[in-house]
Amino acid sequence: MAVKVFFDTSVLVAAVSVQHVHHRASLPAYLRADKNHAGCAAHSLAEVYATLTRLPGRQRMSCEQTLLFLDEIRDRLKTIVLDSEEYSAAIVDAAGEGVAGGMIYDALIGRCALKAHAETILTWNIDHFRRLGPEVAKRVRTP
Image 1 (cartoon, rainbow, N blue to C red):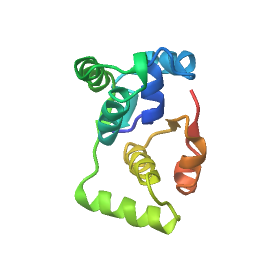
Image 2 (tube, helix red, strand yellow):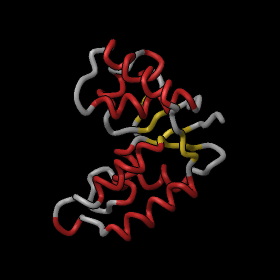
Image 3 (cartoon, one colour):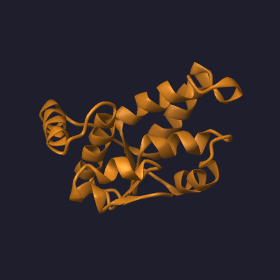
């Protein structure tokens, strides 16, 4: 189940959103990815949906467009899920690191990356992921 590259939601959103400031760096990384070497957290599918369907103005994607992109993600990337024990352990560990609020979602993504034995976690939220302990921090990169 090991993957070379693990995608954070921030990179997936930037890859598809042409007007996103990080689009030009994110899209090539995403297009190079395949199921044999790359993955994302199942939770990221919900985050991508929530973000793309609520972007401001013309950047906003319809529900139908977003679902098509989610299908593309699932075809291109391994989707990693946590079972209930792993999910609970991730929350307890995050609390131990002082993670609060919405950063818990980054902690869940980080835990999925560790479960997938990812060599690299691609994100635009470097500081968030570096707070998740040394095992996650040493894998974090931008595209």
